[in-house]
Image 1 (cartoon, rainbow, N blue to C red):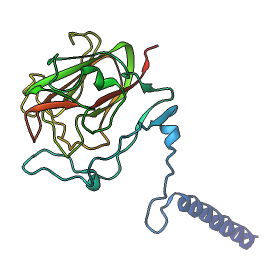
Image 2 (tube, helix red, strand yellow):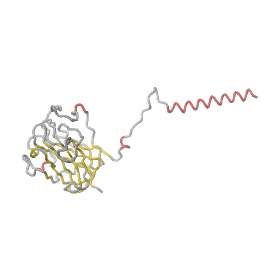
Image 3 (cartoon, rainbow, N blue to C red):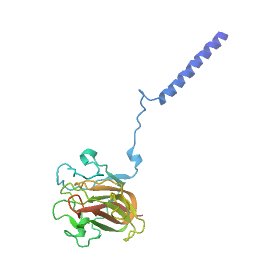
Image 4 (cartoon, rainbow, N blue to C red):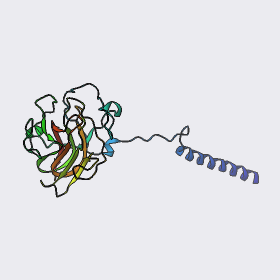
Length: 246
């Protein structure tokens, strides 16, 4: 009888040990590597879609890097494909056809309304040329919007770099209420808005995408301070992607 009980006890012990090993094995990595975890991008951004603006034709091949310009982001060939703008479904360019004012009310070339006319082609006759040094343009969206992204085309006939680029939004035309600076590479605080840390960038047909992350505002103001070729300031088009504030 005692031998029978001893045998049953040993069988039970082996069974329990085996069950414990199986439970541990399920949690242990395979071949010393942790198990892969699948990421559901749609679950991470419910209701968000990719915004793909229509791009103009390229005006030059490759992205020549101007010499002696520091604090510069790598050209597209090195940085890889630009991540898309993600925004709620129904987001659209709310700057199209909206009024534009400027620190230079009488451009050297072009008319201010060209900045929001929907034409992004970089050829002659499609850009606005403002006076030298520090200048800015302001777009009145004519209503309050949740702004998710801003695309800016200064000039892309050649690979230029515009200096002291700042983009900000506000609820009022004097920029005193709900002011948000979305982008700032004014490294020396020439505009008096605070020294920025964003990288300078090379102008291409893609335009510069600024992620606004749903900030609310009615007015969008863009600053610049000449470029690496001359002291003048240029704009081809500005697109503001948003939805009305509910």
